[in-house]
Length: 392
Ligand SMILES: Cc1cc2nc3c(=O)[nH]c(=O)nc-3n(C[C@H](O)[C@H](O)[C@H](O)COP(=O)(O)OP(=O)(O)OC[C@H]3O[C@@H](n4cnc5c(N)ncnc54)[C@H](O)[C@@H]3O)c2cc1C
Image (cartoon, rainbow, N blue to C red; front, side, top):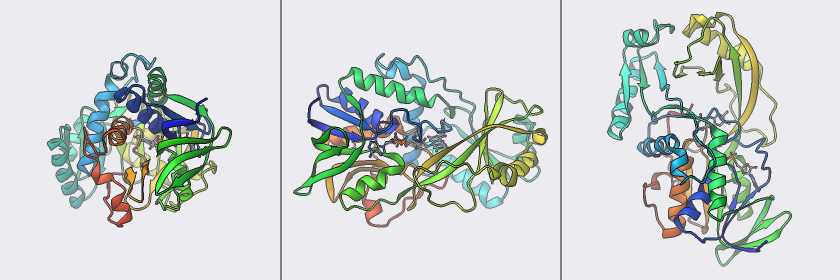
C-alpha cells in the first residue's frame, strides 16, 4: 500500500465516506485514503442514528443543507452514478410535527416557518383544531400550535447511505482501510502526515477529521481545542397495540420525540442531567422511559396506555457545546486540517451536502455549491455561537 496520499480522512462512517465520494467524483485520480478504526461501526453515531431528515431548522444554512440532502437521498442510486450498489434508501416522507404549548412558542414556529418556506421548505403552522383534524389520535387540548412539513421530511436507511457512499467512493478509486489514527505530523504550520497504528506514517497534503465523537482527540494531537464531546442518548423501541398509526409523523413534544418504525415506535428524550460521557460508555439509561417519557407520551396520545419496551439502544451525539451546530472547513491555525465535526444529532441528513462542501473547499480553496461559512471554524475560535435552536 502507498505511504503517500493527497488526502487522508480519519473516520470512515457517513462523513468520511461522503467526503471520499465527493473528492473522487470531483477530482478523478485524486489519491484518497480513509482510515476507520472499527469498520463494524458498532459505536459510530451513523449506525446508532434515528435516521431522520427535516427541513425544520432555525438557521437558514441548515435548511439549505437539508434541501440538498433530501433530493440526494430520494434519488440516491442515480446521484451516486449507479456505483453505490444500494437501490434505494426507502425515504418515508411522513413529515415532522413540532408541538408547542405557549404563545411565544407559536410566534417562534411562525417566524421560522416563514424562513424555511423562503428556502423552499413546505412548513405550515397549524392551530390546535387543524392538528386534531389531521392527527385525531393526538391530545391537542394544551397545545397552542404545531409546525408540520408535509413533504421533504421523514426517515431513511442510515446504513444504506453509508454503504452507498463507501461503495461509490471505492469504485471511483478511494482506498478504505481498517486502522486507527494515532497522531498527526505537523511541519511548518501544516499537517504533512497522519500516523496509523498498523501502517505507520502516511504522508498527505490534507487531513480530514471525520472522527465523530472522538474529533476533539484528533485536534488535541495538533494542540487545538474543539468543543465537541460525546453525549449519551438512549433510544427505545416500543410496542403500543392500541396506537398503530403507520402514517404518523416524527413528533417532537416538550420532553420526548416519537416516530413509527414498521409495527412499533421509536422514542427518546434528552436526560435532565445531560453532559459528557466517555466515548466507550454505552450503558443505557433505562429509567428514562418509565420516569420521563411514558407519562408525557400517554398524555399526548391516549392510545399509548399499554406500552411495552421491546428493545433499546444507546448512541452518542458528537455534541458541540458552543452552539449545537456543525463545525466545518479548514482550521485557521492549521489550514491543511479540515474539520467535519460537532453535528449534535443532525449529521446523518447533512452528510450529502457537507461531504460535497468539504470536498469542494479542499479542491478549490473555498465554499462553492453552498456557502457553509456560517458553520466555519472561525466562529468557534472567536467564541461567537451560531446557535441551532431546533436540536432534537
Ligand atoms: C441516537 C441518535 C439519533 C440520531 N438521529 C439523527 C437523525 O434522526 N437525523 C440525523 O440527521 N442525525 C441523527 N443523528 C446524528 C448522526 O447520526 C450523526 O451526526 C452522524 O452519523 C455523524 O457521522 P460521523 O461520520 O461524523 O460520525 P460517526 O458516525 O460517529 O463516525 C465517526 C467514525 O470515526 C471513527 N474514528 C474515530 N476516531 C478514529 C481514529 N482515531 N482513527 C480512525 N477512525 C476513527 C469511528 O470509529 C467512527 O466510525 C443521531 C445520532 C444519535 C446517536
